[in-house]
Image (cartoon, rainbow, N blue to C red):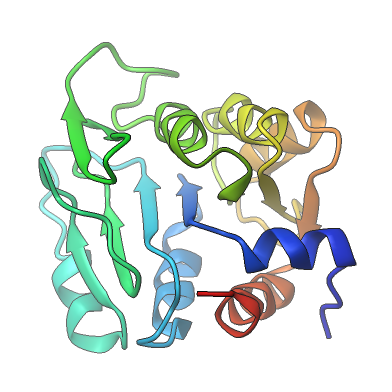
Length: 203
């Protein structure tokens, strides 16, 4: 059973957003984590997965049919709502505006990736500061590690998948190396953590 330290539980209670990044090896875990969320999940969730823009994926539609939460591909000017999961669209960086809406950006790739996990993590941190939760999962490059450290420096809560459980260890290990106080969670504890967010959050 995952027991959160008091200071971590306090961050969970005040959370305003949860942002999850993944690349190679992270797809199945993302899928299962979204399916585990209750319809009343108290904060909006943003997911950034590296995927080829030429490959048509129906992940959002499939999850929207199966999950208790609403799931959609993020679009320009979408308003962030609790109980909804927003997937970054292929070939666009996803940004969060101060008014709680989303915007799409076509600037240069970061770590050869667009969408970039770093870009969205940093954008979320700029808006939500200590109320941002960043989670970095399996991946083959270091995209997301700098962004997770950025969230930490703004006093948000940062989590990396335990590299032992990751299909590809590079991304979570880079985050662990860059962050000073990163929570390192097994797959089992990741599911327990998102359940804790649902239970502990103060509306």
